[in-house]
Image (cartoon, rainbow, N blue to C red):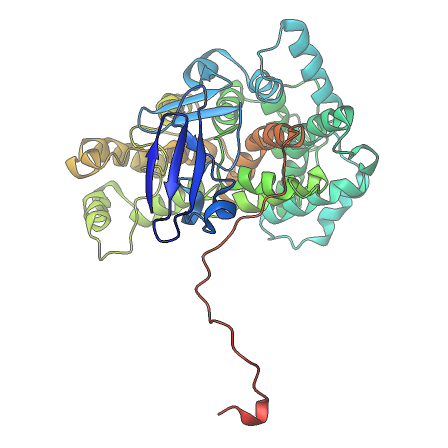
Length: 436
């Protein structure tokens, strides 16, 4: 094979057959260009091979842009640093769904619509009684989200813009209620209904921690921290769970099924479960005195110990979200009086030592968003089993935005990855009595 480009297309030629393919160069507004390989198999009879899709643009999107080398994350063009400092999760949700920041009136109407949909059908609440008390909350959330289509099938016409809007508001509003119910079920406590006088994060905290026998004042620092975490986790381009939502949704499946698939994909420890792994690692290290030993193990290629919460597949420098969340992490630990907790002291000391260690600095293995989010969740009282659920609540906005974008695209096609087959060639069946 040989190739040449003229700037607008890339010509690939198979010298053996003399056949060639003209691959158009598609340019985005920013970021790397992409070769359109849609006709490659037709023209040359070959596929591209890209395990993990690390170098493949499977879709065109206007929602989120990441430059991993420069540490840039943009939501609809707005830097994450500006949104984290000045915006709210509800405003960011509106931005991701509709493409522009809302006016004060638009934000009020959007927030009111979300509040209107916070309750879930009583029959859905009874679903939780079918789960064992120690079932993982992600198992419950995935199952209950998938079952929502049985209750709201009257508005699941994916080709109806109004139905798509109602679905979007319902899923964003109800996932916190479902998540809190999963937590309460695991504790054997009564379900707490949503309170629409509270903001999004405050309402979630109330549903998770309030009990019927006494008042529960929502801590403003905890609510602020949770709102910030939701902003930082709201979307992250074509990650594994978002791609799963798109792939499932491309079949025309009802949107609740697509979101449920995304929840399941997020559950993996290499994706949304990474912040749980950070706390497990800190417990394994145990004390500040053990840090040098475990850092040495992390540098040893023959060791199975990994420093969780450091580095990122996309970001080759400091994760921009980590820079933001680091300050909030320290604020939460100081304001909530948890700095005397040995685990938090260990986390802060590990961060300090690793940031000065030449081995990690040279490899750009900086603390990422998972390192700090796990510490914050733990500090405000959220159990480790709920960490990934918190991630799912935030990411539901990104999932919905990408699903909406895909469904409204006239060029949408069902997702169908291809493969490089390495199994047996054709062979004939031999009867069992003739097999050696």
